[in-house]
Length: 357
Image 1 (tube, rainbow, N blue to C red):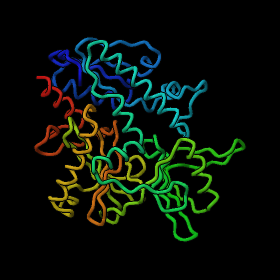
Image 2: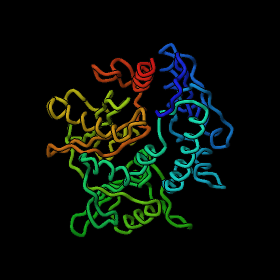
Image 3: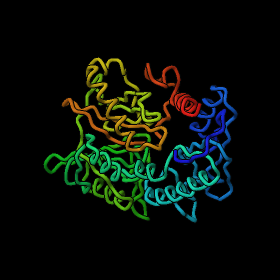
Protein backbone atom coordinates (compact mmCIF):
# COMPACT_ATOMS: atom_id res chain seq x y z
CA UNK A 1 0.00 0.00 0.00
CA UNK A 2 1.32 3.42 -0.89
CA UNK A 3 -1.40 5.71 0.46
CA UNK A 4 -0.21 8.05 3.23
CA UNK A 5 -3.58 8.19 4.99
CA UNK A 6 -3.97 5.82 7.93
CA UNK A 7 -6.79 3.28 7.69
CA UNK A 8 -9.73 3.49 10.04
CA UNK A 9 -9.28 1.73 13.38
CA UNK A 10 -11.01 -0.60 14.01
CA UNK A 11 -10.60 -1.66 10.41
CA UNK A 12 -13.51 -1.07 8.07
CA UNK A 13 -13.55 -3.36 5.04
CA UNK A 14 -15.18 -3.00 1.67
CA UNK A 15 -15.29 -6.09 -0.55
CA UNK A 16 -15.56 -5.71 -4.32
CA UNK A 17 -17.07 -8.95 -5.54
CA UNK A 18 -20.18 -10.77 -6.64
CA UNK A 19 -22.39 -10.58 -3.53
CA UNK A 20 -23.64 -14.17 -3.46
CA UNK A 21 -20.25 -15.68 -4.25
CA UNK A 22 -18.64 -17.89 -1.60
CA UNK A 23 -15.47 -15.81 -1.73
CA UNK A 24 -17.34 -12.73 -0.55
CA UNK A 25 -19.38 -14.50 2.10
CA UNK A 26 -16.40 -16.40 3.54
CA UNK A 27 -14.28 -13.25 3.83
CA UNK A 28 -17.20 -11.41 5.43
CA UNK A 29 -17.58 -14.28 7.91
CA UNK A 30 -13.90 -13.90 8.83
CA UNK A 31 -14.29 -10.15 9.36
CA UNK A 32 -17.29 -10.70 11.67
CA UNK A 33 -15.48 -13.49 13.54
CA UNK A 34 -12.67 -11.04 14.29
CA UNK A 35 -15.17 -8.67 15.94
CA UNK A 36 -14.77 -5.99 13.27
CA UNK A 37 -17.54 -3.85 11.78
CA UNK A 38 -19.72 -5.47 9.13
CA UNK A 39 -17.88 -5.31 5.80
CA UNK A 40 -19.49 -3.37 2.99
CA UNK A 41 -20.00 -5.23 -0.30
CA UNK A 42 -19.46 -3.34 -3.56
CA UNK A 43 -20.87 -5.49 -6.39
CA UNK A 44 -18.76 -5.93 -9.50
CA UNK A 45 -21.85 -5.03 -11.52
CA UNK A 46 -21.98 -1.62 -9.84
CA UNK A 47 -18.27 -1.12 -10.48
CA UNK A 48 -18.61 -1.90 -14.19
CA UNK A 49 -21.67 0.36 -14.50
CA UNK A 50 -19.90 3.24 -12.76
CA UNK A 51 -22.27 3.21 -9.79
CA UNK A 52 -19.90 2.87 -6.83
CA UNK A 53 -17.87 4.87 -4.34
CA UNK A 54 -15.38 4.24 -1.57
CA UNK A 55 -14.98 5.84 1.83
CA UNK A 56 -11.85 7.35 3.38
CA UNK A 57 -9.99 4.86 5.54
CA UNK A 58 -11.68 1.75 4.15
CA UNK A 59 -9.50 -1.27 3.43
CA UNK A 60 -10.68 -2.57 0.08
CA UNK A 61 -10.41 -6.21 -0.90
CA UNK A 62 -11.07 -6.82 -4.59
CA UNK A 63 -12.16 -10.38 -5.22
CA UNK A 64 -12.62 -12.46 -8.35
CA UNK A 65 -15.30 -11.24 -10.79
CA UNK A 66 -15.92 -14.83 -11.89
CA UNK A 67 -19.11 -16.92 -11.89
CA UNK A 68 -21.46 -14.13 -13.01
CA UNK A 69 -22.62 -14.10 -16.63
CA UNK A 70 -23.51 -10.40 -16.76
CA UNK A 71 -20.19 -9.38 -15.22
CA UNK A 72 -18.42 -11.58 -17.78
CA UNK A 73 -20.39 -9.97 -20.61
CA UNK A 74 -19.46 -6.47 -19.50
CA UNK A 75 -15.80 -7.37 -19.03
CA UNK A 76 -15.64 -8.87 -22.52
CA UNK A 77 -17.40 -5.87 -24.03
CA UNK A 78 -19.96 -8.15 -25.65
CA UNK A 79 -23.34 -6.92 -26.83
CA UNK A 80 -24.72 -10.46 -26.53
CA UNK A 81 -25.11 -12.70 -23.47
CA UNK A 82 -22.02 -14.74 -22.62
CA UNK A 83 -22.12 -18.52 -22.34
CA UNK A 84 -20.22 -19.12 -19.10
CA UNK A 85 -19.33 -22.66 -20.16
CA UNK A 86 -17.48 -21.58 -23.31
CA UNK A 87 -13.69 -21.72 -23.18
CA UNK A 88 -13.08 -19.08 -25.84
CA UNK A 89 -12.94 -15.37 -25.03
CA UNK A 90 -10.31 -15.22 -22.29
CA UNK A 91 -8.23 -12.59 -24.09
CA UNK A 92 -11.17 -10.17 -24.30
CA UNK A 93 -11.99 -10.90 -20.65
CA UNK A 94 -8.40 -10.14 -19.62
CA UNK A 95 -8.35 -6.80 -21.44
CA UNK A 96 -11.65 -5.79 -19.87
CA UNK A 97 -10.66 -7.01 -16.42
CA UNK A 98 -7.28 -5.27 -16.29
CA UNK A 99 -8.82 -2.05 -17.60
CA UNK A 100 -11.54 -2.20 -14.94
CA UNK A 101 -8.96 -2.98 -12.25
CA UNK A 102 -6.90 0.06 -13.20
CA UNK A 103 -9.93 2.34 -12.88
CA UNK A 104 -10.90 0.64 -9.64
CA UNK A 105 -7.47 1.22 -8.12
CA UNK A 106 -7.63 4.90 -9.04
CA UNK A 107 -11.10 5.23 -7.48
CA UNK A 108 -9.99 3.55 -4.25
CA UNK A 109 -6.89 5.67 -3.86
CA UNK A 110 -8.70 8.83 -4.92
CA UNK A 111 -11.18 8.31 -2.09
CA UNK A 112 -8.45 7.93 0.52
CA UNK A 113 -9.13 4.21 0.93
CA UNK A 114 -6.59 1.36 0.82
CA UNK A 115 -6.37 -1.21 -1.98
CA UNK A 116 -4.99 -4.66 -1.15
CA UNK A 117 -3.52 -4.96 -4.65
CA UNK A 118 -1.93 -3.08 -7.51
CA UNK A 119 -3.35 -3.51 -10.99
CA UNK A 120 0.01 -4.13 -12.65
CA UNK A 121 0.81 -7.05 -10.32
CA UNK A 122 -2.59 -8.73 -10.66
CA UNK A 123 -2.30 -8.29 -14.45
CA UNK A 124 0.99 -10.19 -14.45
CA UNK A 125 -0.45 -12.98 -12.30
CA UNK A 126 -3.23 -13.41 -14.88
CA UNK A 127 -0.73 -13.51 -17.75
CA UNK A 128 0.99 -16.90 -17.71
CA UNK A 129 3.67 -15.87 -20.19
CA UNK A 130 4.56 -12.64 -18.37
CA UNK A 131 4.47 -14.39 -14.99
CA UNK A 132 6.75 -17.19 -16.23
CA UNK A 133 9.23 -14.61 -17.52
CA UNK A 134 9.15 -12.64 -14.24
CA UNK A 135 9.82 -15.71 -12.09
CA UNK A 136 12.57 -16.89 -14.40
CA UNK A 137 14.17 -13.45 -14.25
CA UNK A 138 14.47 -13.56 -10.45
CA UNK A 139 15.96 -17.04 -10.53
CA UNK A 140 12.99 -19.12 -9.42
CA UNK A 141 12.67 -22.62 -10.87
CA UNK A 142 9.93 -22.82 -13.51
CA UNK A 143 9.31 -25.46 -16.18
CA UNK A 144 11.11 -24.85 -19.45
CA UNK A 145 8.97 -23.38 -22.20
CA UNK A 146 7.77 -25.68 -24.97
CA UNK A 147 6.10 -25.44 -28.36
CA UNK A 148 2.33 -24.96 -28.30
CA UNK A 149 1.70 -26.13 -31.87
CA UNK A 150 1.19 -29.80 -30.98
CA UNK A 151 4.59 -30.95 -32.23
CA UNK A 152 6.03 -31.97 -28.85
CA UNK A 153 4.93 -33.16 -25.43
CA UNK A 154 3.86 -30.14 -23.41
CA UNK A 155 1.47 -28.75 -20.84
CA UNK A 156 -0.41 -26.17 -22.91
CA UNK A 157 -2.39 -23.41 -21.20
CA UNK A 158 -4.49 -20.49 -22.33
CA UNK A 159 -2.32 -17.43 -21.68
CA UNK A 160 -4.99 -15.64 -19.62
CA UNK A 161 -6.99 -18.68 -18.51
CA UNK A 162 -7.89 -19.77 -14.99
CA UNK A 163 -9.28 -22.81 -13.16
CA UNK A 164 -7.62 -25.12 -15.73
CA UNK A 165 -9.95 -23.80 -18.46
CA UNK A 166 -8.73 -25.13 -21.79
CA UNK A 167 -5.59 -26.73 -20.38
CA UNK A 168 -4.18 -29.49 -22.61
CA UNK A 169 -1.67 -32.08 -21.41
CA UNK A 170 -0.20 -33.26 -24.71
CA UNK A 171 1.95 -36.36 -25.06
CA UNK A 172 3.82 -37.00 -28.30
CA UNK A 173 5.40 -40.42 -28.92
CA UNK A 174 6.66 -40.63 -32.48
CA UNK A 175 3.62 -40.33 -34.74
CA UNK A 176 1.15 -40.91 -31.90
CA UNK A 177 -0.33 -38.07 -29.84
CA UNK A 178 -2.57 -38.00 -26.81
CA UNK A 179 -4.30 -34.89 -25.46
CA UNK A 180 -5.86 -34.85 -22.00
CA UNK A 181 -7.95 -31.73 -21.42
CA UNK A 182 -10.75 -30.09 -19.47
CA UNK A 183 -12.22 -28.79 -22.75
CA UNK A 184 -15.03 -30.54 -24.56
CA UNK A 185 -14.68 -30.16 -28.32
CA UNK A 186 -18.03 -29.81 -30.11
CA UNK A 187 -18.40 -29.72 -33.88
CA UNK A 188 -21.32 -27.58 -34.99
CA UNK A 189 -22.58 -26.03 -38.21
CA UNK A 190 -20.91 -22.82 -37.03
CA UNK A 191 -17.57 -24.58 -36.60
CA UNK A 192 -15.58 -25.84 -33.63
CA UNK A 193 -16.78 -24.81 -30.15
CA UNK A 194 -15.04 -25.55 -26.86
CA UNK A 195 -16.81 -25.96 -23.52
CA UNK A 196 -15.43 -26.20 -20.01
CA UNK A 197 -16.31 -29.54 -18.54
CA UNK A 198 -15.98 -31.13 -15.11
CA UNK A 199 -15.14 -34.39 -16.90
CA UNK A 200 -11.57 -34.54 -18.14
CA UNK A 201 -11.43 -35.85 -21.70
CA UNK A 202 -8.80 -37.66 -23.78
CA UNK A 203 -8.42 -37.07 -27.52
CA UNK A 204 -6.33 -39.42 -29.65
CA UNK A 205 -7.24 -38.51 -33.23
CA UNK A 206 -4.92 -36.03 -34.89
CA UNK A 207 -7.86 -34.15 -36.39
CA UNK A 208 -9.39 -33.61 -32.93
CA UNK A 209 -6.08 -32.52 -31.40
CA UNK A 210 -5.33 -30.12 -34.25
CA UNK A 211 -8.82 -28.62 -34.10
CA UNK A 212 -8.60 -28.30 -30.31
CA UNK A 213 -5.32 -26.38 -30.43
CA UNK A 214 -6.49 -24.25 -33.36
CA UNK A 215 -9.62 -23.23 -31.44
CA UNK A 216 -7.56 -22.31 -28.38
CA UNK A 217 -4.85 -20.40 -30.24
CA UNK A 218 -6.70 -17.07 -30.86
CA UNK A 219 -6.75 -16.38 -27.11
CA UNK A 220 -2.98 -16.92 -26.89
CA UNK A 221 -1.19 -19.99 -25.58
CA UNK A 222 1.65 -20.62 -23.16
CA UNK A 223 3.28 -24.07 -23.20
CA UNK A 224 5.70 -25.66 -20.75
CA UNK A 225 7.53 -28.94 -20.57
CA UNK A 226 5.70 -31.59 -18.64
CA UNK A 227 7.09 -32.17 -15.12
CA UNK A 228 6.98 -35.76 -13.82
CA UNK A 229 5.67 -35.25 -10.28
CA UNK A 230 5.95 -36.97 -6.94
CA UNK A 231 3.10 -39.44 -6.43
CA UNK A 232 0.98 -40.42 -3.46
CA UNK A 233 -0.99 -43.67 -3.67
CA UNK A 234 -0.25 -43.82 -7.39
CA UNK A 235 -1.65 -40.32 -8.02
CA UNK A 236 0.30 -37.27 -9.23
CA UNK A 237 0.76 -34.54 -6.63
CA UNK A 238 1.14 -30.81 -6.59
CA UNK A 239 0.80 -28.16 -3.90
CA UNK A 240 -1.28 -25.03 -3.53
CA UNK A 241 0.56 -22.73 -1.12
CA UNK A 242 -1.37 -19.68 0.08
CA UNK A 243 0.66 -16.65 1.12
CA UNK A 244 -0.64 -13.81 3.26
CA UNK A 245 1.42 -10.66 3.49
CA UNK A 246 4.24 -12.46 1.71
CA UNK A 247 4.40 -15.41 4.15
CA UNK A 248 3.28 -18.98 3.47
CA UNK A 249 0.31 -19.64 5.76
CA UNK A 250 -1.66 -22.53 4.25
CA UNK A 251 -0.80 -25.54 2.13
CA UNK A 252 -2.89 -28.21 0.50
CA UNK A 253 -1.60 -31.28 -1.31
CA UNK A 254 -3.67 -31.99 -4.41
CA UNK A 255 -3.62 -35.45 -6.00
CA UNK A 256 -5.10 -36.71 -9.24
CA UNK A 257 -5.23 -39.75 -11.49
CA UNK A 258 -4.93 -37.43 -14.52
CA UNK A 259 -2.63 -34.44 -15.23
CA UNK A 260 -5.03 -31.77 -13.87
CA UNK A 261 -5.04 -31.70 -10.06
CA UNK A 262 -7.73 -29.00 -9.68
CA UNK A 263 -10.21 -30.07 -7.05
CA UNK A 264 -13.23 -29.18 -9.20
CA UNK A 265 -11.91 -31.54 -11.90
CA UNK A 266 -11.80 -34.56 -9.62
CA UNK A 267 -8.57 -33.84 -7.80
CA UNK A 268 -8.51 -34.74 -4.13
CA UNK A 269 -6.82 -33.34 -1.07
CA UNK A 270 -3.91 -35.61 -0.23
CA UNK A 271 -2.11 -36.32 3.03
CA UNK A 272 0.25 -33.37 3.55
CA UNK A 273 1.98 -34.98 6.55
CA UNK A 274 2.85 -38.08 4.50
CA UNK A 275 4.13 -35.87 1.68
CA UNK A 276 6.36 -33.95 4.06
CA UNK A 277 7.71 -37.20 5.48
CA UNK A 278 8.39 -38.47 1.96
CA UNK A 279 10.29 -35.43 0.71
CA UNK A 280 11.89 -34.56 4.05
CA UNK A 281 11.80 -31.34 6.06
CA UNK A 282 14.71 -29.58 4.29
CA UNK A 283 12.96 -29.94 0.92
CA UNK A 284 9.61 -28.96 2.44
CA UNK A 285 11.04 -25.73 3.84
CA UNK A 286 12.70 -25.03 0.50
CA UNK A 287 9.27 -25.34 -1.14
CA UNK A 288 7.88 -22.79 1.31
CA UNK A 289 10.85 -20.52 0.60
CA UNK A 290 10.11 -20.76 -3.15
CA UNK A 291 6.50 -19.74 -2.48
CA UNK A 292 7.56 -16.77 -0.37
CA UNK A 293 10.13 -15.65 -2.92
CA UNK A 294 7.37 -15.83 -5.52
CA UNK A 295 5.07 -13.74 -3.33
CA UNK A 296 7.83 -11.14 -3.01
CA UNK A 297 7.49 -10.56 -6.77
CA UNK A 298 3.93 -9.35 -6.07
CA UNK A 299 4.48 -7.25 -2.93
CA UNK A 300 1.21 -5.31 -3.02
CA UNK A 301 -1.10 -8.31 -3.49
CA UNK A 302 -2.06 -9.25 0.05
CA UNK A 303 -2.80 -12.91 -0.64
CA UNK A 304 -1.79 -15.30 -3.42
CA UNK A 305 -2.31 -18.95 -4.29
CA UNK A 306 0.98 -20.36 -5.59
CA UNK A 307 1.10 -23.76 -7.28
CA UNK A 308 4.29 -25.75 -6.71
CA UNK A 309 5.13 -28.82 -8.80
CA UNK A 310 7.19 -31.31 -6.75
CA UNK A 311 9.30 -33.13 -9.30
CA UNK A 312 9.91 -36.86 -9.07
CA UNK A 313 13.56 -36.03 -9.81
CA UNK A 314 13.88 -34.16 -6.50
CA UNK A 315 13.56 -30.69 -8.01
CA UNK A 316 10.58 -28.41 -7.45
CA UNK A 317 9.06 -25.82 -9.77
CA UNK A 318 6.65 -22.90 -9.54
CA UNK A 319 3.74 -23.80 -11.79
CA UNK A 320 1.39 -20.83 -11.50
CA UNK A 321 0.57 -17.74 -9.46
CA UNK A 322 -3.12 -17.15 -8.70
CA UNK A 323 -4.25 -13.71 -7.61
CA UNK A 324 -7.48 -15.25 -6.30
CA UNK A 325 -6.11 -18.58 -5.13
CA UNK A 326 -7.35 -18.51 -1.54
CA UNK A 327 -10.70 -20.34 -1.89
CA UNK A 328 -9.88 -23.41 0.19
CA UNK A 329 -12.80 -23.86 2.59
CA UNK A 330 -12.07 -25.44 5.97
CA UNK A 331 -8.30 -25.56 5.42
CA UNK A 332 -6.57 -24.48 8.60
CA UNK A 333 -3.20 -22.75 8.47
CA UNK A 334 0.32 -23.98 9.10
CA UNK A 335 1.48 -24.06 12.75
CA UNK A 336 3.51 -21.05 13.79
CA UNK A 337 2.03 -18.78 11.11
CA UNK A 338 -0.66 -16.12 11.16
CA UNK A 339 -2.91 -18.79 9.67
CA UNK A 340 -2.64 -21.22 12.56
CA UNK A 341 -6.12 -22.30 13.64
CA UNK A 342 -7.98 -20.27 11.01
CA UNK A 343 -8.79 -20.56 7.31
CA UNK A 344 -7.23 -18.46 4.54
CA UNK A 345 -9.70 -15.61 5.07
CA UNK A 346 -9.24 -15.58 8.81
CA UNK A 347 -5.48 -15.39 8.28
CA UNK A 348 -5.83 -12.39 5.98
CA UNK A 349 -8.02 -10.51 8.45
CA UNK A 350 -5.70 -11.41 11.33
CA UNK A 351 -2.65 -10.21 9.40
CA UNK A 352 -4.30 -6.91 8.53
CA UNK A 353 -5.30 -6.30 12.14
CA UNK A 354 -1.68 -6.84 13.12
CA UNK A 355 -0.46 -4.63 10.31
CA UNK A 356 -2.60 -1.64 11.18
CA UNK A 357 -2.87 -2.03 14.96
